[in-house]
Length: 148
Image (cartoon, rainbow, N blue to C red; front, side, top):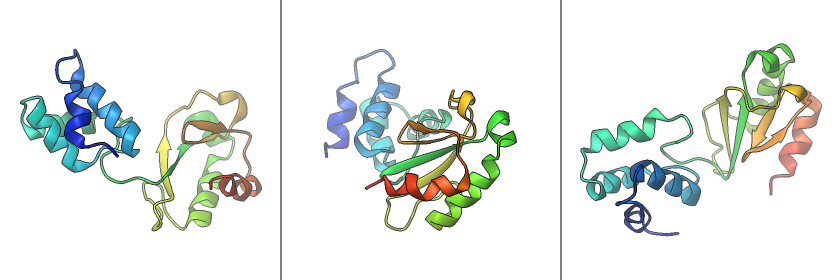
């Protein structure tokens, strides 16, 4: 994997460079390493608190390690009405973690999110941005087994 400074420095002189560098870091690591925020503060010559504030403000950015597979459970009203709570319970049971956690082997991270734009197929989860809809608890095991 590339060096933090190398990734961040590519965006130093671009408008919105800090945010763009965070997108690049997250693409490379699947999250923003905390150490990379300090590097970004140095490269962009801003206080570390400001660099951290930008990274933590946007819900798309995640600071700290995440799993290889990011499962996001839609918790919008249509999914909730369609049984999202049962899907979430099933995911938590199958993975042995709660929402907001990562499995011990770093394979899966389970997150809650707002609408993923698939309301025609509620309830919906995404795994690394790929949507899975019209879910019921018995489908979850097969979906998770697709993740190798």
